[in-house]
Length: 328
Length: 169
Image (tube, rainbow over all chains, first blue to last red; front, top):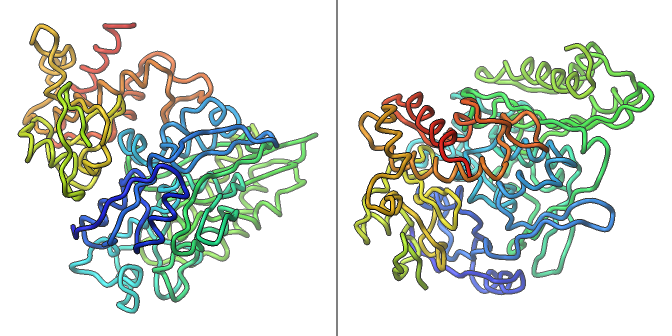
C-alpha cells in the first residue's frame, strides 16, 4: 500500500475543507477502499475519514426517512422504521456481504463501492479500461458470468455490486450531496453512470463532493416490498441477479409498481418499461412474464451470462407473484 | 490517540497504513487473531470493536482510535478457564486445524448478542418481528462470513446452538 495522509473529520464542512486542500478520497468503513489500496488499484494521497460524521436516521416532514451517510449498513437494516416501512431496503442490506462487513460499511461507502469484476482487481495480469483507461477489457470474451446485460459498452461490461442500491433505486431514493459549490440532491437512479467510453468515471459526483445522506419518501409500495437475490452460494456472495420490488394493488388493479434489478448493469437497473406495462392491470403471472419479456428484449448478453435473461425474468415474476399474492 | 484492547490501553501506530490486524499480530504480539485472506473474504481476522464484530484486516488501526477491541485473548472466563463457547467447540468438534477458530468464536459471541436483541437476518421470515427461536438456518446465515476450509461448519453450528440454548438472559 502506498503511503497517505490520514485525517478524521468531525463534521461535513471540515471534511470538505480537508479534501479540498489535497487530492483525497473519503473513507467510510474501508471494506472496499482499503482492499483496493492494498492492491495498489487505488492510491490516494490522503484519506479523509468520514465514518465518524453524525450517523443518524431521522423522520422527515413528508413522512419519510433521512439516513445519514455514515450510518452502518447493519444499523439501517435493523432499524424498526426501515423494517416496517421499507422492508426491501432492510432485506437488500441483509443480503449483502457478511455481518462483519455490514457492521463496518457505511451507507455512503456502499453507494460508492466499486465493481468486483475480477479483471478490474487483477492489476498484474489483466486489461481493464476502468482501472487503466485505454488498456482494453478482458471481461469481454473472458469469464463474464457476473457481468452486465444492460447498458454495457465495448469498453466495459462490469456490474455495480451493491444490493442496497438496488433497493434504493426501487424506492426512488434521493442522495444528498455537499461539495465545494454547495449542496445538491441527486436521485439515486441518476448517480451512477453507464460506462460508455469512460468506465473509470462511475458517478456524476464532482471532485470533493461528499454524500451526506439518503432520503426516502413514504409510499404503500415501499411498505409492501421485497428483495430476492440469486447467487452461486446461498450467502456471502455477490448477485448473479437480484430483484427489488414494491407493489400497491387497489381494487384489483396495480396502482404503483417498482422493479429494480441488480447484477445486470454498472448501475441499479430500474425496469421502467415493465412497470409501465403493468401499471393499471390486474396482477397475474402471465402479465408479469410478458412485461419482463419486453423489458429484457433490450438485453445484450455474452457467452458467460446469457442465462441472466431467463433468470431475471423468472426471479422478478416470482417476487411480484409473492407481493401480489397470486399463484406463482 | 489510543485504543483499548482486552482492557489494556495501547498507543496507535504512526503509519496509517497499519491495519488493526497487523497492529494486533505484528506490533502487540496478540497472535490469536489470524491472518487469512487479508481482503475481507474469510472472517479469520474477526474481532469485536465496541460490541460489533468486524474484520480487523480491513480496519485501519487509526480508525479504531478511542474504541474498545476484544480479541480471542480477551474471551477467557473470569476464573481463567475457557469461554463456554470455546468449551462447546471442543465438545462438538467445531474445528480441525483450528486456524479459523478464533475468528469463528469472536464472530459467534457477537452474533449471539445480535440474535438476542432481535436483529433480523436475510433468512428471517418476518423482518418486523425479528428472528423466532434459534434455527440452524439462522445460525448458518449469520455465520456465513466465517469460512472453515476443514469443513467443521456442522460442529460449529452445533456449538453455537448450544450456547444460544444454554444461557438465555
